[in-house]
Length: 360
Image (cartoon, rainbow, N blue to C red):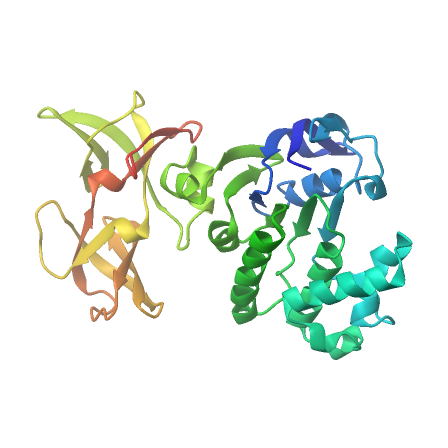
């Protein structure tokens, strides 16, 4: 299989529409992540690609061959579920090799493929254990092994790390990315965690309410979001937003709201807008600086090497990510600077991007 393509995909559950006219191409050997909040349609899309759900409308293609009518066992895909879905009474080796056994492959072939998959995942010493004797991370590796042992054209992963603790999730992100490079197959990954999407993907497809909002590389999604939803969802901590107007003052295009003014290098045709700026592009100084706005520290949260500082500026709470240490306490007077070259503008009426100077 070289690519997976969906065209006009729609899925209805009674009166509710889970996926609404989705069109998307996953390239050969690409790692593409479907990301969005709960209920956005990402897992439903994956289940339709796999064949576990029948589409209400639209078509699914594998290498230009329509497969929407085929059952799951006739599609060249392997799926990894959020719940692991391991057989509790079978050993690790039996779980990994179960699909091969059902395909009636020779015992020696099954043993060789199971051993190869186990070595790739670092679980060759666990082959005789039962799932109840494994940790969460080990169970997840077994679930991955059961998928990759099939040598499928595409691997579909539905939030496989959501049941793991934070430290193990970080480790398994790297393991899955390495595995993708080794098996050289198409991966479609579903998650609600934007950090997973940013760190693992070749491209990201952002969904909301069953519709595709934007598809691009992690850099494109982060630096040039197509609308306010993408800008707000992708990024941790999230982007700051201020609602106001663009005005001409002494030949300068300027964003204004309450007591806040930001000079703009460029602007769209809208007058009522939302200005977005990421916390890492907000500067905080204990002293007045040219173009900085006076404010007071609302709260400061230590993140390790950085501090997330929330500042009250004219009644607006603006978050800044600054290097540690940060010594100003709550209610301390500070001054906030916003780099005009790093702002994003969105139409107040519908949230579409008007200009995104970041990375331009």
